[in-house]
Length: 507
Image (spheres, rainbow, N blue to C red):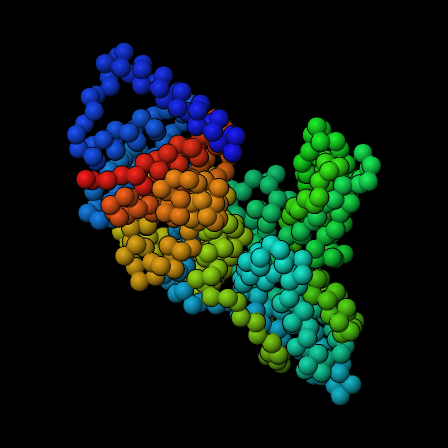
């Protein structure tokens, strides 16, 4: 909280200096009588803070009551939107697929089950892009215990069908999507990080390993750790040391490219209780089938063959005609999935939705096909597709370009759409949940602003809805690029504007 107040004081002081300089130059106009003119003037003073003199702000604010634009600045200029790109992905998915759309993950067997419980063939897991297998919609307090619920239930169902041994392989079929594992324009040094997890039609636990650190009993001793799921799929070199409270702390991951060999460095306080981190795995399909095979063995189903990605088996380019489907797992509905995408800004889930659009409507799970479906939808609602740059579905890429006017046009369309409530409730709520749960607390914006954040280096965005004192709803998009001050200062400017809108009255 101290940093929040420090930044506000700093911003206020610099704003006062700016106003004083304007007054000296006789550029400051006299206070205006009309409430909207006054609002426009105040937002202008907040935006034009000298701390952001080397940055660019794009702002568009419109009343949904009468269509009036109450503030515009660079509204038709292109900006990197960061995770505001998820607004376009989730909106397209919601409208095109419907709120009750579900993913289906199927398990097939090749060969027959003998009287002795032996499957004389392979077990094939065919994915459709379901992001929820072991995903973080499970409450944090139950993560360790419930991460493997789905895979354990699959093993139980196989036992109920009489399978006690599998003579063949466990095969992961991820062929619904192509093999482009990362988004276009993603930074290479982000690869070990959870937010840049690889993309696969067979994904499990956000394609990450959860790791929990606790300090050693003595200073400088190696930190203790546990991984979830407990698997041999990764090899960890632990170089995290136990340090005093006044020494540098933090945990950093390095991955040898193309492998699951992870080097972990950093420090943890000797007084820390537990520190949780995540890191992304190489080849998510291989990860899922490896963990599933380990679960089968633990539950008493022996597997003679290896666990493999279907790409390693040239003859398995599709489910063979003599294969039999023995299990079908259904995901939660899309309206729940987009809540996770938007509230916690889950990149992998957004990328899976992006490719699902391509696979569902073009029978190709390429990112370019997902992009074409999004652009086609935008064209249908009046946004020129040739004036928006879409490189991925999550916004992690720096190749994306959108305008604030395009963002509020999308939000305005959703406001009048039959699925408005599903979309509106998927957005983070100021001071309450999601990525803005600690922002705007104690103001009229708390529990009022529903908005999506966006952040990559030197990019900060906030776009959504806010209701005024009169009950008038505004749609807004606030994007800044190329700033060099702390991101918390961009947050403060966005928060001040939202708070001003929440306090606005035409009376």
